Image 1 (cartoon, rainbow, N blue to C red):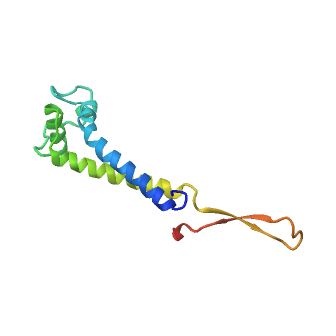
Image 2: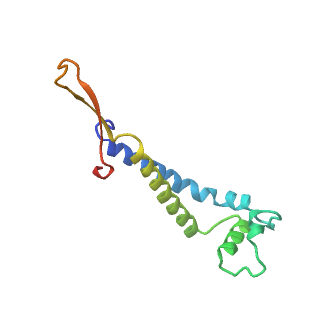
Image 3: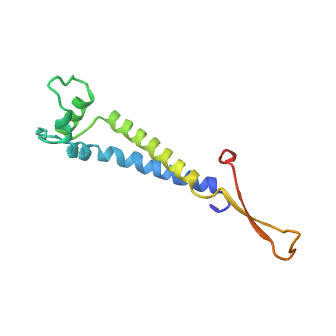
Length: 132
């Protein structure tokens, strides 16, 4: 079925990668924040978070939201959904670009010449990318 319809195959691959990214990304938020230095005890000394911390961190800023999530060990549902959707779109887009550039645009054609009618010459024809 997939060999007969390569677009279906590519669509299923892209969709699968997007779903995995949408599920995995929200689960990785807290560990990623911890690795960056946003911990339950505050900003870890010498971490990436400490590098970006300023004395005038504004309430509601990205830094403040990361510190809040790192301190509590949880993020709001809306944030998890936003991260999941963003990760799915990014992963789906990258996978689509990779699938588009992986083969599938090359066809081998046999052509006979006047010199030797029994031995066809092989000619490669490359499709224009815009034809897909």
